[in-house]
Length: 478
Image (cartoon, rainbow, N blue to C red):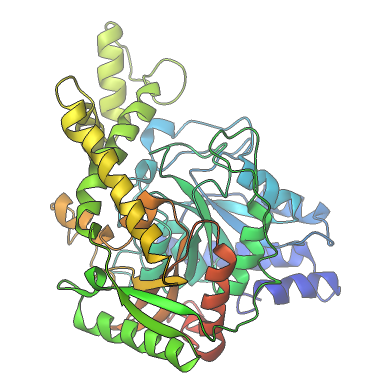
């Protein structure tokens, strides 16, 4: 069952060849047997999954489909930790809109996936619950912050999983784990019930084996939500129906800045081969300039920490979350609760954010970063006047070893150099499996204009119709 596509699983349920209960049992057994090697889950919910499967509708768009949710999405009566000690005891009283909509489409939740604490990280080593391992090589990282979701799908623990992307946290782990992951346009998917890191950047998306599978899931989770002020009131296309697989005449832009020094040779070869495949399918390849790309890292690491500092101020040991033992006074309560509840990376970003928002530095850093963000968005706007899609690497190299960059946060931040611009601009992007380098997966990044997820999914689908990288399975997880 874990080798079947989502469309095949849905068809099997509707035809009576299997049941939601049988599917749930199959994937729960894989989680129990294989996850101890990966640490991809924080919380498994077998009893709740079996109860839900017993009453799952067999006529929904995702009838009986097992799914995992990143532990950043609130799930009613199930712990929602955000990978942090701060929320280790938090049980959400309601479902996030994403969870609610997918449940309404017929999905069965198997559990919650591991993640970098409060989605801050590029390797999934910042979790209070320990690092996630990459199923392709257990000595390597799966990427972050949605590494648990990516690793779980790659290992066949679930056909699909939700994730969030603030600066690359869907596309990067999808690339490093050899699965397909899509970050839709900012505002396409509701953020209600999704615990905030950086509110102007966070966007929910999904992981699956293929673009077709992602189309099924995204179609069910996307759409306007009046409970989310950043949600855009815009119709959701039929993503599955739009998968023609025809890219003839499509103009694909290659930003020179993404193919400059820093891109590892074997990874570059895989990306070049994928681009050549698009040419063979009838697409036209055009080199383009995106002159503000080199400012994306510094811009992001002003804006995101600033917003994180503001969002995480609510965790004070008073209302909910971790509370230190025997506080001596209010200052001691605040200081020790936050010091004990937050990990090193979260504390680092809170401090950076507080600094750039402080008196005397707000204009020099935060305001200037927002102006630069606008220039980056204008780069995309200008590019899409002459091309239909942009193709680029996702990362500079394949997955690095666990602990390799733990003591070098700047090197870790640079790992997102190719994904940050699209996040700052709010455009949709995805990672598509495109080969291997040094025995580890390489992803091709595709970026589309605002609200053109259908174009993105169709281009990825066309590529996957003539390649089989997305069907590869890591040894030991077949």
